[in-house]
Image (cartoon, rainbow, N blue to C red; front, side):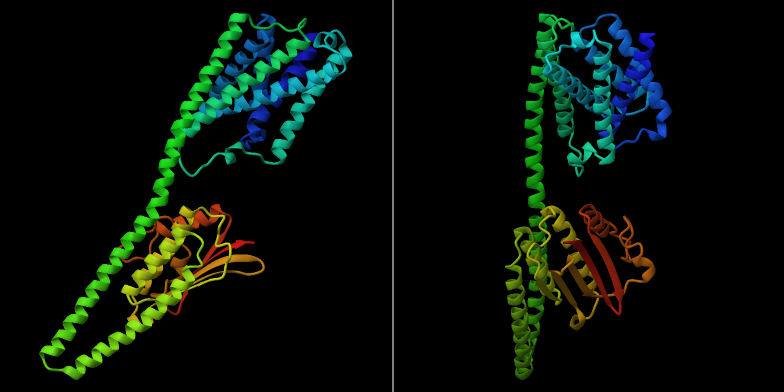
Length: 446
C-alpha cells in the first residue's frame, strides 16, 4: 500500500514536473501532448523505483535516470539528440538543486534524512516541499515564457559554440549532483549509499576530461569568432573601396570626354565656345565642391567609422553619376543598439537601390535625400530618391525574398535582408512611391 501511495503521489508527479521543467527551459508546452507526457512520467517513475530496488548508489542512480530520460525523449517524443540532452540536463539540474534545498531545510533543524524517513509526517512534508519547489520552478518558467535558446547567438551556425554549451551543460550537471551528494552524505551518512573510492575517482576523472574538452572547444570557438569578426569588419570597407574605385573610373571617363570636347574646340578655332564650355565646367565643379563640403561636414558627425566610410563611398558614386546627395543627421544615438555589420547592410542596400533608381532619371532630376533624426516617440531613418515610380501592387511584395522590380530579374535579396534586420531589432520599415519619388522610412521606438 505504501509503495502504491508513493508511486502515485510522489514518483509520478516528480517525473511529470521534471519533464515539464525540461520542456519549459525551451519554452515548450506539454499541453498539446499531455497524454504522452503522462505516460512518459509513469515510465520514468517505474524506472526510478526499479533502480532504487536494486540499491544502486545515489550518483549512479542519477546518471542512469539521466540516460534513460534522454533516450526516451529521442524515442518517445521524437526529439533530436541535442535537444533531448539539453532538456534532460536542465531537468536534472533543477532536481539536484531542489533536493539540496530540502535537505538543507531539514539539516537547519538538526534533522538528517534518516530522521525524516523514520517519521511519516516529516517524510510527506519533505516530499511535498520538494514537489512544491519543482512546481514553482515549472510555473515561473512557463509564466515568464523563458527560453534558454535566446541566450545563445542565433545569427550564425557555430559548431564549436554548440559543443561548448553541450559539454559545459553535462559537466555542470555532474559537478552539481556530485557536490550535492557529498553535502547530503556529510549530514546524512547513515541514510545514503555512496560510490566507492574508485567510482568517485572515475567520476572526477570524467569531469576533468570534460573540462579539458571545454578548454579546447573554447579556444577553437574564440579563434573562429575572431576570424568572423575580422571578416565582418573588413567586408564593408572592401565594398566601400570598390565603390570608390568605380566612382574614380567614372569621373576619369567624364574628364576624358570633357578634355576631348575642349581639344576639339581649340582645333577648330572655336575659342569662345571653348571658353564658355570651360566656364560651365568650372561652375559645375564649384557646385559639386560646395555639396561635397556640406556633406563632408555632416559625415564628420557620424559616430561609426564604418558608416562614415560607407557614406563617403556612396557620395563618390553620386558625384560621378551627377546625383545630388544630401545628408541630414540630427540623431545623437544613430541606431547604436544595432550591430555595425547589420547597420551597414541596411544603409548599404537602401542607398544602392536609391542610386540605381536615380541613375534612370535625367541628370537635372537626380537626387537622394537622407534624414537621420528622432522625435519624442521614435528615432527614424528616412531615405528618398528620384526615379521610376514603383506600382502599388509591387510595393506590397517589395520585401519578399526573391521579388525584384528590376527588368532583368536580378536582385530580390537586398530589401529582404533589410526587412529581416529591422524586424530582428524590433523596428518598423515602410515604403512609398508616387510621382517619381520613392521613399523608405525605418523607425524604432525611443
